[in-house]
Length: 303
Image (cartoon, rainbow, N blue to C red; front, top):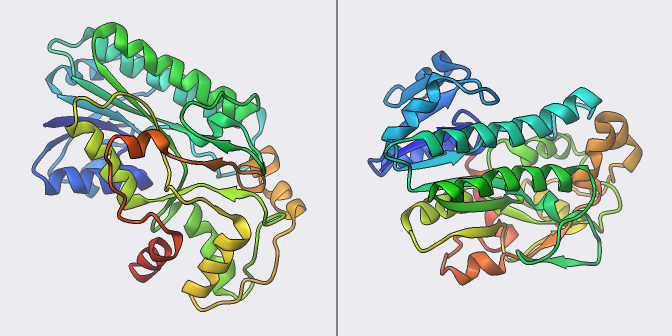
């Protein structure tokens, strides 16, 4: 296949490009930073694009079999000022809108669009269990996800297959786990907030495998939770992290510390949601890391 990818130089994107190239697929990288992309992936074709604007880059999608749209303003970096919140929304809503516009204009058109969303779609809860058929929440992140997904849905008007993957917390070398490691390594780690909030997670290799699985199975379409079948509470997550790096997990991080650091964005880790990937399991997809302990050990041992 020839696969166009946005967000290719990000945490998940890098691993996906590596896997696609290892399996001899052709990769077209759409990026704001062409020189950076070419340094990281000298074998890949890289084209400059502005994710929220139409442009010549859209014509390049005509030659592609599939598009994987991973671009988006990071959620867990910096406080959610009004501008940051607008950037979070625009980068997803407008970014997806422009990708769908490009697919609709393409000749021939890509056969499939893999578009992420997030488990923030469901809102937060300590008691509810969410599956792909659960209704959306009403907080800011839930509204972002609704807008994001509704733009992606429009690709069906062009006759292109759509797979929406609602990402959980992705475990790999970087991302959320990378931010949590430092205090643990300094013997200052522990549960964040109450410790009772749910962490719905997925190993980065399982996430990349799931994207590839959806690319390669034309019968798969719709919305799927990109999470392990076994979410855990934050206290257990931190206990397993501490045990894996041989550090204690006894010093709780108070809510106020995160709220001072992240403001409204702290809700991503302070509240959480228990998400079960019933739809994903029903496709026949097999997880390599369905349990947290071996997933955590794999990530830490390959740091």
